[in-house]
Figure 1 (cartoon, rainbow, N blue to C red):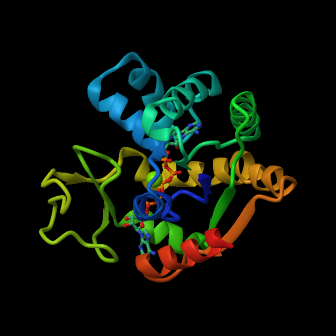
Figure 2: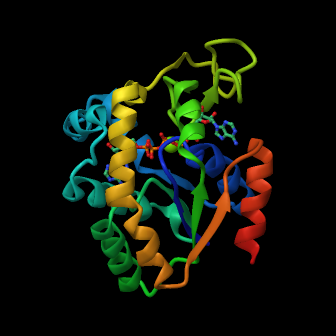
Length: 215
Ligand code: AP5
Ligand code: MG
């Protein structure tokens, strides 16, 4: 299956992707996680991306599309993938379509996670992620690690993302509404969009998502 996850910052894309990718046996590809890995490794790509991310703006398409393409070409993605955070504007969606078309492939679904803005703000405020791997995501209240400040998955140190400050979150939400939401209409025209509510417990949302994808 080739699936795109879409939803505002803090909707729970990364959290759900971990379970969905496991259930569907496809890799979870998050452009945000790829950028954060590049930043912690100090690569040129990471240095370029960091300023944009810290301001809550999109990293330029020239950088992002190439990075996503390279990841999708890896062996584990030959039979499908779950994209989280890509595409994030119509130009990226068009680029993805072109890449898939070249290999005679297409997307199977675009899963749209719907969450009210006040809930998103609460989720982001309490989020903690792991220094070793930003795909290991917790919440101080809603999804607390067994030991405070320590990752359940790998024992790494948990910290708050630099772009989770109140001011940057405001920019990220605005960028979502103006640049990312239009891709939902773009994919609606291809009859690919499945919208579900992302409210409720993590496992309830996963069950809802699996149900929606089966249809
Ligand atoms: P990215 O890392 O993709 O951030 P985002 O889209 O803003 O999404 P988040 O990761 O903030 O939220 P999420 O939906 O994954 O929620 P999570 O599961 O963590 O991108 C960061 C930046 O990178 C961008 O701003 C941009 O600069 C750059 N970038 C990335 N991709 C790009 C692209 N394609 N083009 C250009 N630039 C790009 O959950 C949030 C919290 O809620 C957690 O604490 C979690 O434990 C909790 N939670 C989850 N589910 C529930 C639940 N059901 N109930 C209660 N709490 C829950
Ligand atoms: Mg995420």
